[in-house]
Length: 253
Image 1 (cartoon, helix red, strand yellow):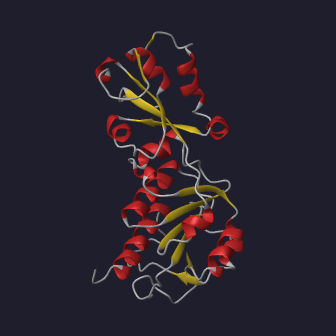
Image 2: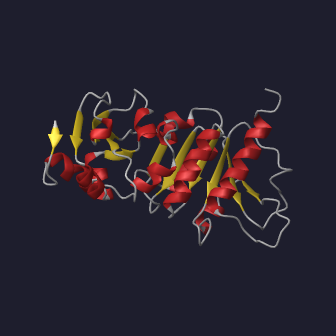
Image 3: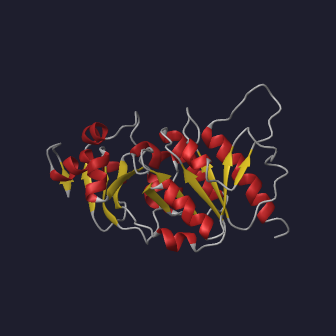
C-alpha cells in the first residue's frame, strides 16, 4: 500500500508514538534503520513496516510505502534511514527474570536517553540477565533510547516503572548481592570478589543513587581512578563495573 498523505492513519499512529503516554497506552514503539529493523527477532511482533521506494522490496507481513518527504516529516533524525517498524512491547515478569543466575542492572532515575541506551547495550554485551528501571527514569522505548541500543533492546529483558526499594528487598531475599557505587567505602572494584548473583545500581546523572536506595544495599564499591576526576559518566561507570564482574565470573571458561 502506498501512502501519499501525512493525514493517513498509519502516519498519524507513528507520529503519536513520539509521546510516552501513547507508547504506554498502545504498548507500541518505533524502530528506525535498516539494520535494526532487519534484526528484530521473530519472537517480537512487528505490527507493520514503513519504507520509502528505496526499500520497497523489503520483506514484511505488512509493508507500507511512502514518499521521502513524508518519511522526513515523521522522523527525528536529520538523515532518515527510510525504513522503520512499529513493534509491540514485551512484558517481562520480574520473578521469572530474577530466577536466572547472573548479573542484573538496576537503574535509579536516569534521565539521559544516550546513557540509557548505552547501558542497555553494554549490559547485553556482558551477559547481564535483566535490567530494571525505576519510575521517573527516561522511557526505554523512546526513539533516542531505542536507536542508541543498536538493536540490543530485543536481546535482554527490560522492566520499567519499578518500585526500586521493593525490587531490591526482593533481590536480597533471593540472595542477590546488591551493589552500589560510593566513595564512602574501602571496597574497590578491582579487588572486590563478586558472587554468582549480583545487582549493580546506576544512579541519576546529577544526584547519583538516592539515599533510600543506598541505605539498603549490601555492598558499596568505588571504581579505582588515578586522575583528578571525581566521578564517571553513569554509562561509563556501568560499563567498567560490568566488564569487571563479567571477567571475574567467566574466568577460566
